[in-house]
Length: 86
Image (cartoon, rainbow, N blue to C red; front, side):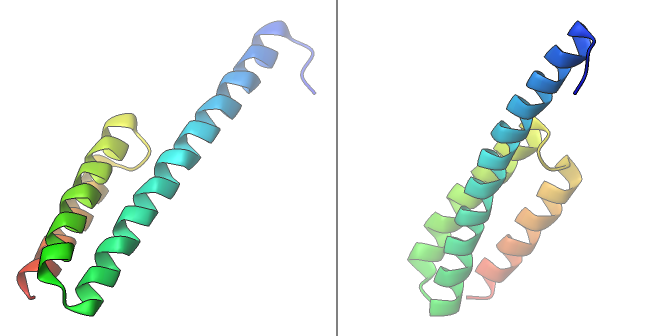
């Protein structure tokens, strides 16, 4: 346990950021999972809608710094490629 006041505050901030990042990352994974299920089912309409929400989730996560912006772009591109193959 830290004794220094500034480090105690920093630990609190890190924990809050960790909780926020975990929520964003969990929501992101859920959206991607819904997209994959729609693609596996062959449902183009559901996959298109799921792609939209997943792409927005990736953009939001990249903006917040939860995932790197290039990783978000690469994964969105891969999902778009899957969508086009339907």
